[in-house]
Length: 347
Image (cartoon, rainbow, N blue to C red; front, top):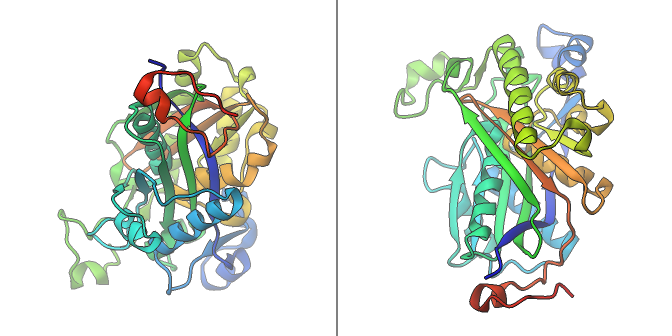
């Protein structure tokens, strides 16, 4: 029996049209455009309008994937939506997406590890394919962070934006995902969290007046923890694959802050030209961050390029994945391998 492997066969993305610029924020906050750029590297962030929720942005990203790759998704086996901004407390956003996309009988659920969400979901989807039980797994990273942001809070407003990305995983005869590692220590949770709205502290008038239903962030704590954790996990995942920084062709880090990205590159000894970023015009799109960057830059990748993905999010939770870029037809059938163990041609 030939081992099952997973590969990314299609990518899509969605970015809202409205841009919240630094000059706009300069007019409403105690800040300057120069201060924002020096501290974050962000010039503008895309903000979705009130008509659309996270599920809508997810659908737009999936439709973009369909249009670009001409793939059929009616028989999708699983839909995983990584998000910190679900449409509702229940049902899950994944189920709302299935209704809007008319997906029938798919396994569907949300995964929330904040900004690390997409990387976690990608690992789960990879395991689904490798199990042999699934042939089409749709991974979505989507967040409407503007719904969690107090526009008067400089610590968060200058950083976060909205967006969604989607990736389709299907079986492949060749291993693409080489290794994934994830860690958490549960520390410093209060430095990046939404204090109210859950079972620990349900929403009430007092909490709303205190604006505790919005995201709170202690920038210095998050910066220090992100740099050290991302650097460490990247070193570990490279060592586990007997690889060095020189073996990596491209790095797609979580798009949180340009100073974090630059610090990680320096610590790992990776050329900044290999560190891909779309942070400047999108801001931190949380769960959508890595998949949007992957979608934006995939035209640069060559067959066999080794790509390092790494993330950091609330929890605190962080991770890293190394995979080889491969081009496999979305029409590739794996059923014969599953049922009989026969070799299958990709032609």
